[in-house]
Image 1 (cartoon, rainbow, N blue to C red):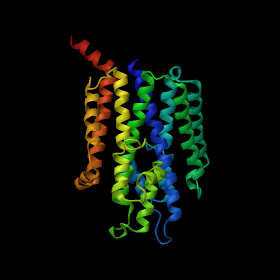
Image 2 (image 1 turned 90 degrees about the vertical axis):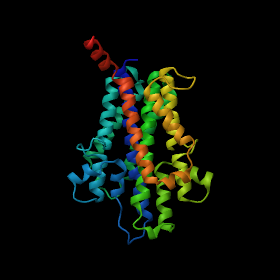
Image 3 (image 1 turned 90 degrees about the horizontal axis):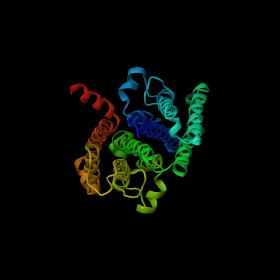
Length: 325
């Protein structure tokens, strides 16, 4: 497969997953607001922190109000990571490689784009309860995933899209967990209170993991939630599960199905996955959850750079080598 095509497929997976996660965060935060005590203000700034775009937001907005945060996360063209920006880029990547996609995948990606434009035209962010819109967006992206799961051959293109999807998902799971641990509670006095329980429950619902968690662990306990979202081997949105699947994608792309590594990206992925595989949740908490997740996000960014240099810059590297000769 041409590196150019692989690059577009990879980023198609990442942008769709990014938009779906933003829709999920917004929807769950609205649900959380319904259960908060009447004397507690709505908390929208954690959603901005979860995306890593705090400085960009504060450069353009004066306060963290509902309308401002929703517009920034969903429709702001100045935010390169907003849902609209992500969907536009996903659609553009799909358009460029349209001959490599199924007809249904392109059609649903195109519909998703126009759904976002409709939401912007109707100023959805100003409505008192826009949850239905974000639920529609999330379901549309899940529909695209479902079409791909049932109609796309498991060849290189499939694995590049899956690789992008799982790396993006691992990053977003780490960010939303980090924000809950450090920002969401008004004070340390609230730890262990019903308010604390509501926040952990909202966190689990943001990754559609609440019911699965309850079946595995029963009662809500912070250390168990951390273990579930970071180290669980079977939950599709845990960081470990995402990295394990992403590693499998890399091996299928390179044809290296016997273990070990063939390139720097596979080596870095294997090292990061093995650290999580043999990690213990109490060691993570003892090290400091924020510090652990911050370090993990740095490694995920470095891993993304290695994937880019290994697979998507091959033509540039070849050209420079030819000129040197």
